[in-house]
Length: 242
Ligand code: SAM
Image 1 (tube, helix red, strand yellow):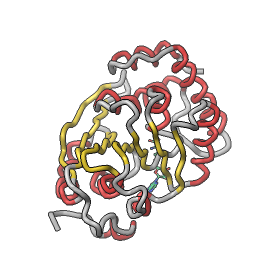
Image 2: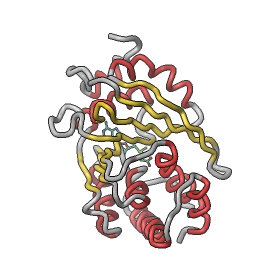
Image 3: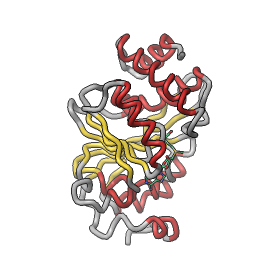
Image 4: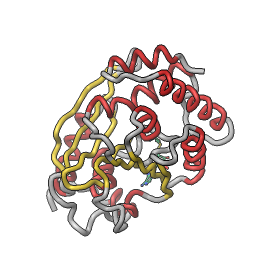
């Protein structure tokens, strides 16, 4: 269904070498996405070429931006139809991922995809709000990496993702061309939740435009009173160190 040669080329541009088997997995994932998208609304992106750039290559920028050690764990916050988490699991069979979302029906699809791609030992879904997960004992401070795309502005996203990330771990946010502005607005929140901005890596994916991967190291624990409840996160943005 997708042009696997194009995906291989885009992955190569990111410094990643996908095997034939992995390219087949991406193709099967695209087919499942296409089939289930007709039944439940998973993604507005339906064109196979756009799928290669906007879903698959975009998700793989995580692996080009940060070195994920063998066997590392990650949580994908607001995974939706499985992005970026599922492509990460396909490209790196050694990683362990929790694909978290507050919308159950999307996770039913992600579960099918994990099953269909034989990824159930590596990945599992979790139906929960990120801010609830961040206050749950066995999830808080638990992951080597937190990753997220298209879920919230960076300030709010920091409150979702940093509590879940280990001290010494990394929070990776996939953003578009407004990354710089979001970062300025989120600086105080990132610091408050124990993060330090390490890098912004810019990628241009074919003609699909600019993407920015914001890399934040977790250098100290998140204070126990965070994350707050979702209404508070939205209504009382962190604008300075509290
Ligand atoms: N990350 C996917 C992608 O890039 O295609 C999905 C993006 S979709 C626009 C946003 C997703 O985030 C939705 O599936 C929504 O249910 C989820 N979401 C939003 N706020 C959330 C929260 N506080 N906790 C968990 N999931 C959340």
